[in-house]
Image 1 (spheres, rainbow, N blue to C red):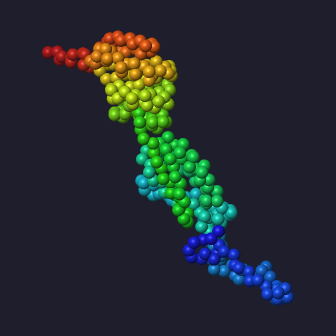
Image 2 (spheres, one colour):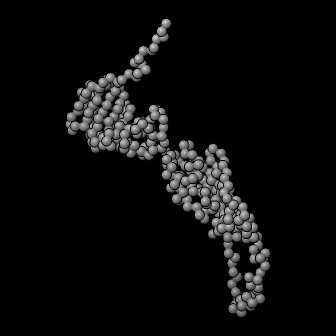
Image 3 (cartoon, rainbow, N blue to C red):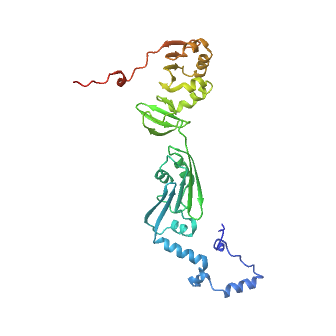
Length: 307
């Protein structure tokens, strides 16, 4: 291994001059004092002596991590460092004392730092970058994490976050999901306008396949208000203008093709207010829907003050 820059000789072994003959080599060994008898100052000079001094100072110090994020700089100190091989390794340029996190918008800095597992790590000698990367990518919003070492003791963590794709209604709660069906976060019921909405058990993981089919039928896709997964087997599509399409399990594409090509049914349901049942093979059933319930506040007259 070779250090680049100043004091590069610290990492290089000094070349040994070849003996001209056996006699001269033996006489040299006899007249030259043994290494064990040399004074300490003679054995450790220049960079080696400086490295020992730095390592000794580190043994009695305290570890400080500086975490730089898009939101600012945070510093935390650990307990006093006990003498260890890891401390000595850190003292000669393999420490890990500064972390920069970039690219995150929805992922808290503290969650990234915890996933990295740096609380008990003082140098690259014990830092498992591959395992840390996997832990960071397990965070809900993180799609990809890139860990880059910055010499001498820095680490850059570059995060690519997932994009919200739909709102999943599961019971009384709403969740943001991405296009793979991964749950990103819970959201307030009725919020996140503009995103597609799905509902029911299994809807999050099955919705991408449904939308791939609906891409062939843009009129249905742009009218979709909510796709409800029923019994984790089939879809009921709730469209604009109080329209509903009931799809069969495992034959969604064929049913939508039948609906799209039947001009009489399309003409009948143009104004909305119908349920179109496509579950039977080669048969379409249409029934009129009841009018949507008016809101209680709109239906009741304002109370009149008594004179």
